[in-house]
Length: 154
Image (cartoon, helix red, strand yellow):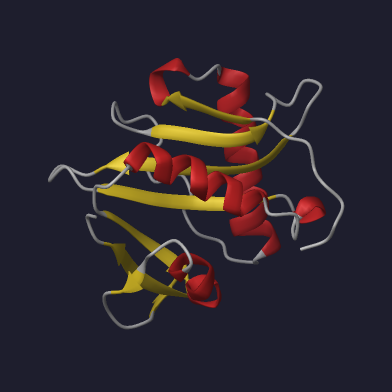
């Protein structure tokens, strides 16, 4: 992490409460990172972003004038378990702890309840720092190695 602090506000909203422009900026950043930057053409829009129990977190504004610098999504599975996904930050601001800030915010909401995620394998140590442990073998998700992980209830 560099010593230059990035000033950005953490926001969160239920899917139904997102302004269309904000949702567009969140999805644009995810496509920029996961599809374009990682050269991984896959169906990033999986139909879960607008679920009633989907909560979106992001750093920055609504893109006017403050850009979205990072985002993640919190889902509640049918069995009641929380699932974190789609964590990404803009390339221009990586290394400033923004991903950590997003994880801290979402885990504050999850609280002591169990939580799962499927993280890119090279980020396993990052997620371990939040109490997640692997629950299975590494697998290929459209050309990117992922690892299923779980943080147990506390």
